[in-house]
Amino acid sequence: MACKKPYEPAIIRSETNFLVIDGTIACGNNAITTITLSRTRSLNDSILFAPELNASVFINEEQGNSYSLFEQGNGVYSSVPLDLDPSKKYRLKVNIANKEYLSDWVAAKTTPAIDSLTWKQSGDVTIFVHTHDPSKESRYYRWEYNETWNYSSQYSAIYGVKDGLIFIKDSTTQTDSCWRTANSTNILIGTSIALSEDVISNFPLTVVPQNSEKIGKSYSILVRQYAMPEDAFRYLQLIQKNTQQLGTLFDAQPSQLTGNFKSSEPGEPVIGFISASTITEKRLFIRNSQLTDWNYLSSEPLCGNVFIIPQNPSNYLIFDFPDPSYAPYYFVTPGGLAIIKKSCLDCRERGGTNQKPSFW
Image (cartoon, rainbow, N blue to C red; front, top):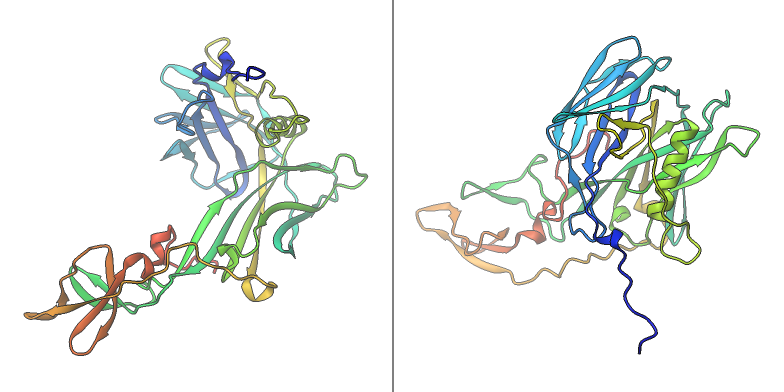
């Protein structure tokens, strides 16, 4: 009964509030740089993300101009489209209250094109990236992606309600078909340093579980590729080990992160490593008809309880809904309207948008 007891080291309860700077200075034509600022939290804190607001963020060009980034909300700061020369050096400057945070000067890298994106189904679907650099100058790579998928409401209806009146939906107001987008969350890095050629082949980016809604109809993934210097790669590799490879006896032990930012307050830790590069992109589509034995079954509760309500005697377009969480389903004879839970008819209730993306 006494062979084990809870172990709660002081570090779990210690309060931390260090600045975290995440992002890459984007070079090339009409490139937009996006930087996210946040604060570290203690290990037992229920708040997972604490954005840093009201900061002033700048890109400095060595022996050149300074470019402002503008606050977008939730700790995100973005530039206007810029034409930063990839042959120059840059640094990031962040001002918060009376403190200044400066990165080291970093030389920009030119990122090679993504050769292709491929996928393979073995129950689940795994998506791979392939690239190479004939000049052998890249060697260290990082990837991010956005995945977008098309899905439908459980039931379909051509009627909607606006200002209490029934109307017939069109392509801009339909709620049968929606699109949802999610961003990558894991650190995806790779290197060809052990190879004679600068080639990355069959690097796995993500896995879509079998029968997932993501490919219930059709699915798209947009991959962004960055070349980076070795020290930036080692920094991300350390974060990857600290956050994504923990939990078993033989995993790497947590270790101290040392980035390339310094605070105007001596000794204050700053979490982050800025690099600069051009960015290359490639998009892949996968349709459900291309897959084998992929049968998406909705986890939403089955829709039932259809109610019939009468029309307003003073205006046949008006129906008095007993509950605003219901929506019009179909008309019945004579003069009634069948209604059902809005979540059964409106795909937006599951977090997506009914506006088709421009690339679809």
